Image 1 (cartoon, rainbow, N blue to C red):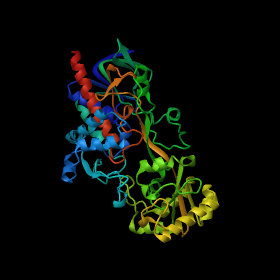
Image 2 (cartoon, helix red, strand yellow; image 1 turned 180 degrees about the vertical axis):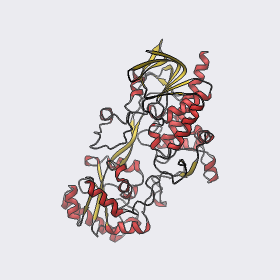
Image 3 (tube, rainbow, N blue to C red; image 1 turned 60 degrees about the vertical axis):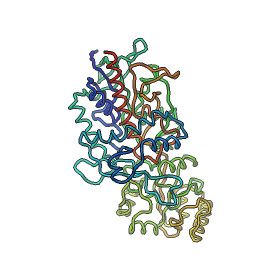
Image 4 (cartoon, helix red, strand yellow; image 1 turned 30 degrees about the horizontal axis):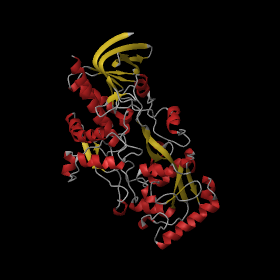
Length: 493
């Protein structure tokens, strides 16, 4: 066993771990960061944009929301089912974090909202311009994975500050002495390290790559009724380590949304079918107002109330031709605006690959049979829906009448959507200082956590009104944990 010594040891070097490492190093502390993969950033490499409140970019756009206002709206959204002091610090830290990143050379391209929302939909959600989209390295249009440019700048700065990032090294156990965290046992292959430290910060990113634990905690069977992102290595190691060290358990949830299975290989469909056509469940019945589709949280929740946790989006050829000519009705900042430009090729590719969640049929009866819907009930639903389209009023869910498109011209197209998730949230109980606490609210000296391992600030539903929230929480909580751990280390001297 090799013995090492440092001021602060950070378990995992994703976004929160990077932020924690940088903050502690900037405070003058020696830092060792463990990372089980061979790259930094973790799930954040797939992302686009951290939230900020009160930033220069927002002031230039004449959006003048204050951190206090954002905090109040957040707390009201979650019905105060979260640590109000931690939430307030999160928002108060967010503008300085954007500036902090810019100081490392990170560039932000533009502000984006949670989703494009029409006037008559603002009753159920407000699209605040809170997400600061990272400009891709070398320029170009921002999109999924553009946050990788931010990770690169942060990693370069960590190297400049002398942070020792130990790749392909896994944290195994928190070393506890006299009730205090004093280091970590880590492994790299067959080699074991005992890393002594004044403070330990756990930032391992949850357990999105652990189907067994997901089923145990949430009841989902991955690949059957859940198709979440599975970032390799996110097994819940840090949460287990913290629990074994005496940490309490915080509220756990999945950052739920919705997607079609294996959506990255049929990206065009995953975006194109998020339109206000006809959405039905496996009973052949409508189950929501279809213009909710851009709000992935609300739609994901609605899908979870349906048989087999599946919702089916249906469009006819007239809709497809309209969208190909004029662009889609409903847009989001992830899939872009050109999803119908190559529709025929996307259909051909899906059919050639035998993608089993996509359907095409010349008649509605044939479409229902292919999907496995009760044909008579489905045809009754279509008839009722088409009558409402002709009348110009949806008397079931009051969908925006501008989106009342009758299903009448074949071929008809359908795609199955299921619950998805970016990952898991929560598990390690912390206070507003990011200090880990026991179940009976006692601080474990020297032990901290940040990021999604301890993110229990959303109640039961991701606050979609503030886009970029989780990425920002990883950054802000990481910074705060790093700063607080450095101060704790100072007090030991």
